[in-house]
Image (cartoon, rainbow, N blue to C red; front, side):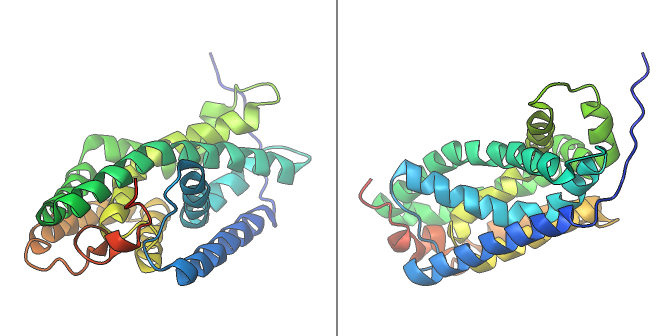
Amino acid sequence: MTRPAIAVRRPGTCAGLLLLAAGAAWAWTALRGSTVGAGTMAGDLPAFLGTWTIMMTAMMLPATAPIASLYAGTVPVHRTAHMIAFTAGYVLVWAAAGLPAYALVIGATRVATEYPAAGTGVASAVFAVNGVYQLTGLKDFCLSKCRSPIALLLDCASYRGRSRDVRAGARHGSFCLGCCWSLMLLLIAFGVMNLWAMVALSAVITCEKLLPRGRLLARVVGLASFALAIAVIWVPVPTPGLTGGGMAEMGLRHL
């Protein structure tokens, strides 16, 4: 059975709109961080999920904008509406990821607060987990899906109905989550709203997906994570989320 042909147009404004949305999310995150301190997150689940969703919007949309724009170019009319629905499905996946993220943050906070000596071990484990995953076949598979927008368009060509765009965005978001979850795990060590860590991780994610040598970069990041897993045992300063003042700022001590 042959797949339907796809006519791709390149809308001029769609990617720009997503980058503006990402910029607004970055501005909110920076303002929030300067108000409550780096690494701070609200202690209740709804507030955490709201903040987490805005953070993911800021960090992930720059890498997703070209694909969402290309997807919008496959429809003849109402491209912006299709792109918004696609992006909504994508962001929904990352918003749902906030639930396990919340549980991990709560658990890490309790460990580092009640057993301060264990904070360094947890930080080392977080870096090691990312190092291992960055070198796995599953990471490479998910990254290949994120790096191949044409494959996404072909996979979603058979989608029908009003939920088509949302389903396509959620599909892309699922592969993106599979590609980047271990990188987001590093925020537990760096501080969940550590603005500089967010900028660095967003740059890594964008480069992994868009640069010609993105797969090589993923492996380099994995090896660097192994180095940090060892270094943090003696030099815990880069991990305030687990070994320094970051836990006192997390706003989760009462939970």
